Amino acid sequence: MKTKAAVAFEPNKPLEIVELDLAAPRKGEVLVEIVASGVCHTDAYTLDGRNPGGYFPVVLGHEGAGIVREVGGNVHGLKPGDHVIPLYTPECRECDLCLHPKTNLCSALLETQARGVMPDQTSRFSYEGRPVYHYMGCSTFSNFTVVPEIALAKIRKDAPLDKVCYIGCGATTGIGAVIFTMKVEAGASVAVWGLGGIGLNVIQGAKMAGAGRIIGVDINPAKADLATQFGMTDFVNPRDVDDVAGHLREMTGGGLDYTFECIGNVDAMRQAMDACHIGWGESCVIGVDGNEFTGHPYHLLYGRTWKGTMFGGARGRTDVPKIVDWYMDGKIDIDELITRTLPLEKINTAFDLMHQGDGIRSVITY
Ligand code: APR
Ligand code: ZN
Image 1 (cartoon, helix red, strand yellow):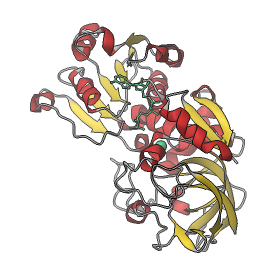
Image 2 (cartoon, helix red, strand yellow):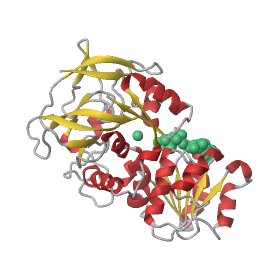
Image 3 (tube, protein in one colour):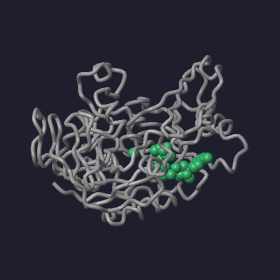
Image 4 (cartoon, protein in one colour):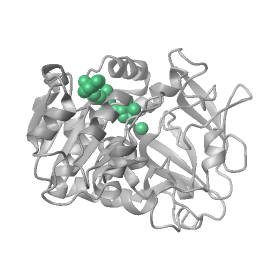
């Protein structure tokens, strides 16, 4: 079949809207009509050529929601008409990682997904007879895409797809980091570096967990209002204080129970560790920075812990439908974080606005 898609033919060039050929889903695969897709920093990271594992030409996009239109052989859990969210972190429920209680990672698609192909080592997309790569196993910047069944979360049909697509990456990453990875307890103190889309979701996750104090740290004071609406109790601008970590330790009588780095800046990662309470403070890295970060052995010897999170520690097929319920029950807010909805033809505008830091999230609809 044919599908309309935004294709990245080479790094650092605008995406081109073209008609691609899309082969039918094979064994274990599903054809999904994408209804909406968020545009995320990770897509830009790859488009900018900074992702060493980036292949071109490629259909980017990994934060989508859509409807199953056809299933390949040996697909038993999904049927045409089901509503789904593609998962860049699949859940096969059979591999060593899936069967281990301590991780949400899955090894089933790691190798092929990283090379931009389906599990049988080939691509379903092609343009003028030449293959076009898949991206993060999702390729949601195409009106139709093929995804393995184990990388699709089936969700309720009354959830608006142009909103819950955000659960395919940003919302789950931030909220999940609090609930699944760090397991923040009621009453705990939390500090969050970076009040963008990820940081705001960490804040609403912390509020949902019943955290006591929730301190936001951002160099842009304009971010404070929305963060306060989401549950932030105190705001610190690093430009107003000499020693951010020292200031936070003073504010909290010795340091934070939990800190989250949501910028992608190694200096902020160090501050977030320095601000943890001796004996039990735990820091979680969420942002991606190409540089190495530093710490001191004493940070750990004195009982602090450094962690990281992928997809918020969520097991996609199990947890994503629950997070959709949280949204439908009003426990979490997504509408406020979706700044604008644009047609596919305007997708390059969505990237420009993200680079300018204009708004929280742009969603593309077909
Ligand atoms: N100190 C404090 N805040 C900072 C700093 C800094 N040195 N540098 C930037 N910020 C703030 C910005 O003002 C902005 O509010 O961090 C926030 C980042 O928000 P977004 O750009 O919206 O990024 P977001 O989508 O939340 O993603 C954060 O996570 O996905 C990963 O690595 C990826 O860079 C991305 C990060
Ligand atoms: Zn993402």
